[in-house]
Length: 265
Image (tube, rainbow, N blue to C red; front, side, top):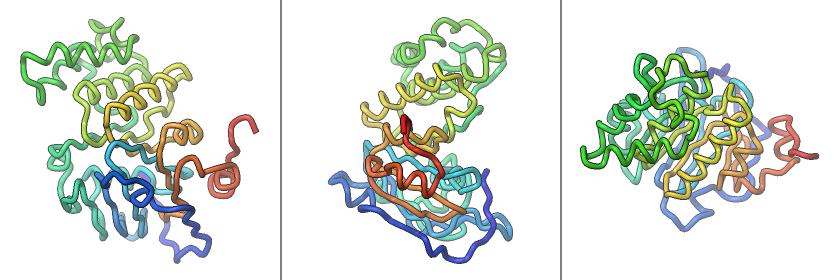
């Protein structure tokens, strides 16, 4: 969970282009306005606003401690906002607990979380779909999940505790996408993954987006995130310092706000 020291209003805020809601004719599935999150005397997020149109991907970028995961946790109800508003499909869910938000089709996948080590890969998947899928359709849902991740199909009878960290991360994502949610909050899914599994993770997220899943993506691989995303925002010390179309976040923006350069430059 990220935390940032309370700061006065920044003078260097730049909002490029237009906000996501204005850049698309699709109505926003998720709308966040003036979000503030405090942890005691520490302000982690201050005045963040954005829209995520249905079926699109928003990349939330920033350095360590910028407030990215706090924003993600507030969206899914894991963290209670101090002030501001969060709407899902036009309904105010600001004060809702995580389990109630989840019932609206919101799934939050965190790095290293969401699997049961004492169960096999197949048992983890069957348990996941048993909560939301009719009995006659569960086998197909599990099969779809295994098709997305061939490495898991090879290990379907293997105890989850014996999987590598990257494979457990894939299983956590497979459990979610076996029955695709309306909104997927993906929080640092690629953290610690081997390059091959990073590629697989982004391929699966792309499939989910193409199938109509709306995604809020908190990601350390900036270039990969921008390739996948429709829109992007950059946080610094809990404040939004840039917002616009992902394709407009070029070398100048990335270097100024994140200290990175475009791949190959």
